[in-house]
Length: 295
Image (cartoon, rainbow, N blue to C red; front, top):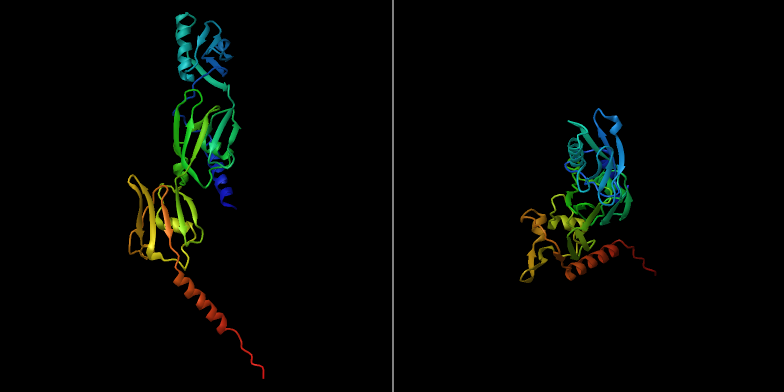
């Protein structure tokens, strides 16, 4: 199975493993939403009603009541108060449930496999929504932002590589919300390595060391000068070059170095090593060849 398929499978399984988390937050009621109003021991007062453009609902016995911008629990308290004030009931027990949202889509933007708009009719976990978009890309920042459609509130969720952490404190995404995944900070490996290029700092602790990025780049080639590796870093005072003894770090004689965003690790090429290796290769092939003399 390819790497991106495994990532997508993780998001799907994680989403299925979280059927319904207890909510630490509630969606605010807005115009166009369809709600269910129930009053305990008064089934004749049960109603399904849609919120008007001005944020009100027309309810039996109490008339127009403004509930937009309230949570279902707050709206229930508002209706209870109205029933008491209008002397319809002395101690009503009211519940309000969301049945249908005015907006049925969620937008997933940024570093996912298939960014776009997806239809959801009920609140879904962030993992389920990310799975709809194919999961994170290899260069995605694991700090995901969820922007609420009605309140403009912004929530943060960290997509951990650890399943237990990923499944704890999962954020819920509501219809109409926007999910934004930024690009992770990058470091660059240049010079005499197997796969030079940019690599994302997308580890679980948001740190990437010299040894880790060299391994990601396929290791330094045999023709490299590992004792003269240079770390090029941008600072407030301009660009600086720091010497790195990759050979000593690999042997455990020096501590590994953690990289910062936009660092460039340059592994120099040795012409002398290249000539020596080429000569040795030619000598080896010549020694193995049979020489025939014709008389």
